[in-house]
Image (tube, rainbow, N blue to C red; front, side):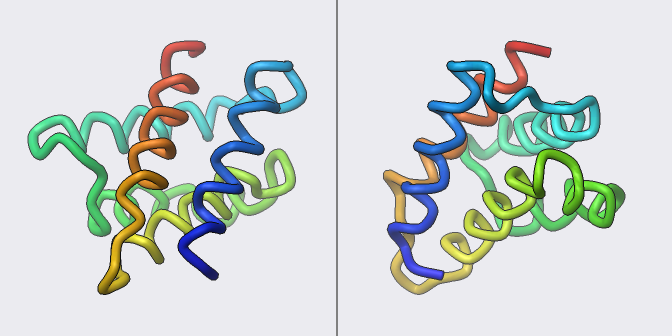
Length: 104
């Protein structure tokens, strides 16, 4: 994975969410809600929050909607763990999660 992978994947999901090509499932919406709730106290996503939010639904999450949210979450985790964080990509990804949560 590269730092630009997060931005590219986020942009693809935003376009598909806006066009209706990607309709998040209940599981995907539940996970985005958990992530946003966990990020509220610190103001941003954390590596631990992503890992904890995906732990319970990890296997089915990799199958629904071709695992697109699962891939995004992996890219978020990679960026959070990297020595050089993609802050713009992380902010875009968090905005996407908020958009998914608003449409629930």
